[in-house]
Image 1: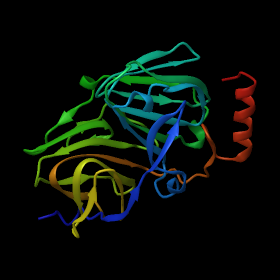
Image 2 (image 1 turned 180 degrees about the horizontal axis):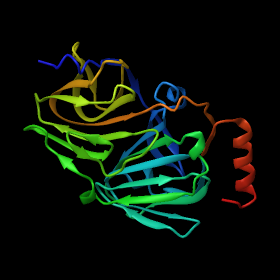
Image 3 (image 1 turned 90 degrees about the horizontal axis):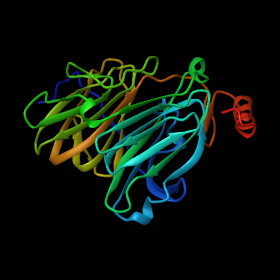
Length: 284
């Protein structure tokens, strides 16, 4: 029986939008612009998944960012990143790149493979107004640096960020306090997932189908489930319909104005205009 304190429910199912980004990379934009307020502090979630080289080979050539963080999680494939400050790293299967764009940088993300499967996610996490102009930084995490726990038989949880089941994640971030989990359940397994009551939260199913909450509403693969907020909720209860895998992403909302123009996310239009001018003036 589900734990009654884990009483978040499935508020809404979202179907992502197929699009192209970068130099023509095919992907599904799961968290779109219209959901930024509801899922504050998250700005965007993309899912890329293809074994067709023409869908990913062009990659993401040099492009700027300011005012937020990007979190890239690779399931399959290899992606090389470089920036205009001389930083460089290689994203490999199971690894994560956590980039704080802060005051601004120009970087590229280019596949280091010519065939095979390229699969993963990129999440945009907003920065608080006081942190938007911090010095840019990277953290490259290999698969073996990300803790994995098994809170019960038939359950595996990779703790990318935050804290879950007594394990501290590979990343800890102040202010937004993100929780980022990759969860695998064997068929029929029921799991109570802890989520701070203060946080907005979503589940994204990418293998199998998941029953959510006491009314057991189903979230199939390729859909994002926005979870209800409740001041007394300790989390959400889920049950696997077959073998499944999904992301749990949650964060403390900033409740600040969002002013976005493409790769610049600030609090006011004037700040965005300044970001554009700084980029044109070569100040990134």
